[in-house]
Amino acid sequence: MIALIVQARTTSSRFPGKVLEDIGGKTMLAHVLERCRQARLQEEWVLAIPEDDPKISDLARLAHENGFNVLYGSRDDVLSRYFNAACIYRADLVVRITADCPLIDPELIDRVTAAAVHHRNAIHYATNTIMRVHPHGMDVEAISFKALEAAAEEAKDGYDREHVTTFIRRDPRRFPASDVGATSIQKEAFDPPWIAEHGPVRLTVDYLEDLEVVRAVYDGCKDKPHTNAHLGYKVFGISEIVEFVRAHPEVVKANQHRVRR
Image 1: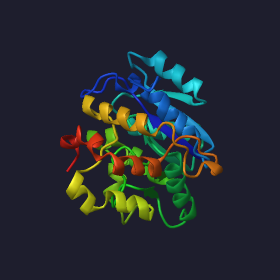
Image 2 (image 1 turned 90 degrees about the vertical axis):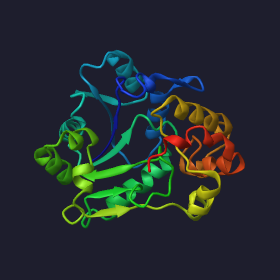
Image 3 (image 1 turned 60 degrees about the vertical axis):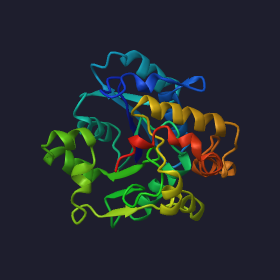
Image 4 (image 1 turned 180 degrees about the horizontal axis):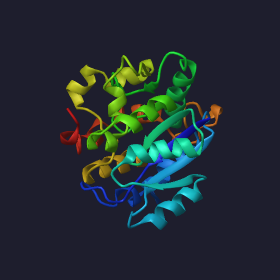
């Protein structure tokens, strides 16, 4: 069983309520859930939210409108939310997405998921973030149940409980990983020479500047069909974003000072 689990809350210290901000007539969370539902390799979809969130009814409503089940759990112990959801839905593989990535590409979700399934006898963790070639905001992680269970039982540090996979990533010998890279066009778009000339690209939303950039990218790409629409993906993806960003590098400059170094 493969369960895709999105974590969301409205109590972000840097940008409270960001997941309910509007992007092109929909909330940011609605975009995330809609895009995740277009991924084709998952069997359960779960929104994991804090049981004490002040907007809990709004989050649950958006989940149900987009075909997601809802799991309620600890605000700060996000790892326990994921582990409990994996247990309830009997998942042997968990795909982790965060609700601050409103442009997440469903095809990329499937690529990471497929890598985890293909190498399931050799790895416990697959992602596209180890040798980063995609912008922040395109992050996908696929975690085996055994690795998630070990982290849930053994991780004691609050940072590890909040960030879910840091305990696993810290020990690649115990939890072997597969890194899913980019296609050649994506590498060309975000390789060091391009970044040196134009700056890094950030498509996750932690600050108001991030939201402005994402809105601009969305407006520039919303009418573009997905390159692999014939496979069932109806929203634009990373290839369309690459094309737009290369033509309009000025659009992504507003939040470059926020890029993690």
